[in-house]
Length: 419
Image (cartoon, rainbow, N blue to C red):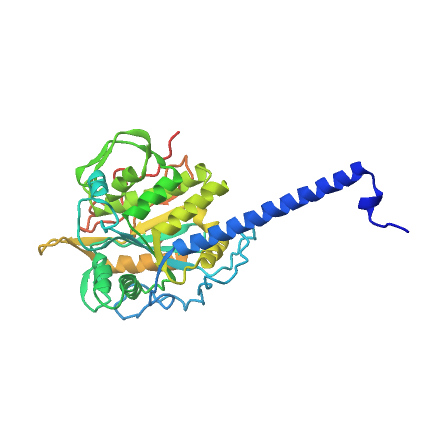
């Protein structure tokens, strides 16, 4: 009788080695299966951590009117999100897709204090203000074929046509939408899109809590302060020199407006965006898987996004625009003229300058006859850094407008890394 099974024909030592080999293979299989399960669970958890809201008016530019200062943008291609349950095959190592459709993202910063505890409100110096306003309103443009990341900030007190047909401060649009059946984010999208003439593809909102979590997930922001920065109203107290801002200090830096005015505050917020990105890169957030996951979870759970921004859609955008997100930031601000004729401080936007800025946002400098002619705030970053440019603007121009380009950037707004 012939026995073909080598386990029985080989020596005991050989059979032991084969059994050991199978145990190793089985162990590796178990580890791989466990890793896949953990990864799948992390993806599901991350996807569920996103707070999504239905937003109308995305991708169609909103209702365009003859009074809209911005040039009507080209009809956008379909940028619909992938359903949360569908599988994605986004390969982050794929070649850069320079033909990816450029997108415009509306970025909102909420001033709601309801996300903070009473003790946190005291520690952070925010006080308690009822209701919710979008103190940050900005349009960001992701264009894989461009050499920069473009952004236009709209000052919170800018008086524009709102979604309900009235005219008022742009930061009141969210509350108007919330008090009706329109929806807060929808009202802001419709307001900004109709006034600017720019089609908005996605919308995101971050509040104080989210901002704190994002900064702490990075590990703080190290930056150089040239002179003392103090604003009791924002609980800001920074000495000159190199220092690391935690979430509370960074929030105070972003909120401070009594150092100069709202235009100065916008410029410092633009600087923070530059510094945060540099800090994340220096801390290995994008190279260390654990830190990347922690950072992604913090960002995802800290944002409110439109319902089409599923996890797979986010992965697609990262794949298409990962290099764009690391390009120098060119951030500019819509200038305007202060209106103090009433009880409230208002800002009348420079409609002509706004139209040129919105054209620049979509088309870049090629869309302007004379780029850099003072229509926006543009100040160079430190030449010794890779921080790019951050918007300036803040002092009154010769014609009484504020937010126009100037020789000196507002206090604390120039990106400068520590040695």
